[in-house]
Length: 290
Image (cartoon, rainbow, N blue to C red; front, side, top):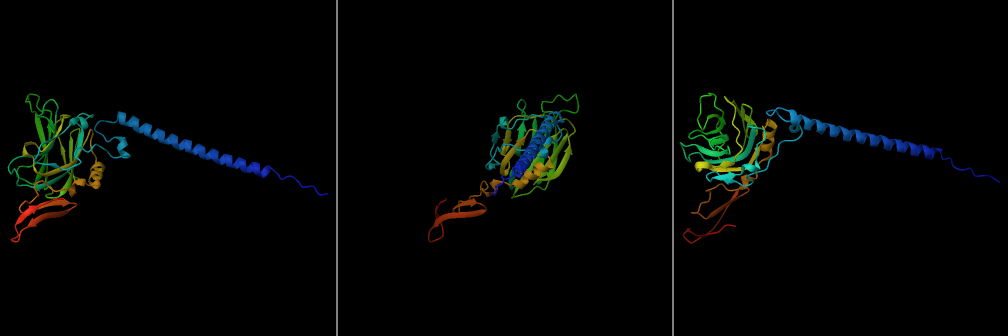
């Protein structure tokens, strides 16, 4: 009688060993990868602790700066609005950054007078501002003024010294982004994500950690929106990213655009709608908005 031989277990054992070795290699690779990531972030954390206050932090290489939007809806440039400083604290001395979108409707408004856009004041002395952003009294220019420590030790003025950096020919009747940053003795201004003016301060800038005030003293004709304040400097990539993100405020009507003589106008997503009822002579007798 023929005897059936038992199947050999060697191939099965070899396959199991090979599979185990493969899993072991994968597990070791995962552990090495996780360890590398942990070391990388630990190195970034340590670098941020020892990096100079005015330098770009290592974390910015990986992610752009984020800050709370203090004006998610348009603010009337003619109306004083106070944004609490507690929501935008400063941690690196006088170094700071602010970004926002604005719309200038009418340059003739308050012609001959300073037209305040926004400023951040010192909590102990409101005369100190860093920065103080306004429109020029007569020219189509944006002025950025920074309070600095007196360059002359004999100056005991309560307001101290100021330095103004001016950007000429800013856009009119269109939304545009503004990014302003102060770091050490440097002042950079970006319009629509591009660096348009860089100034060297003649003195050390004063820190200002108080409230942010929009539209002071009658302000300007137009709107401001999406105000973000930062406790450190902004770089070109930050300004470019802010501009690229755009603004939701372009779909809102500008203050004072309603024409009551011909019914109620509503602007939505760039389109203007008028709802009114006229008599046989064409005179508006009733207006409605939806």
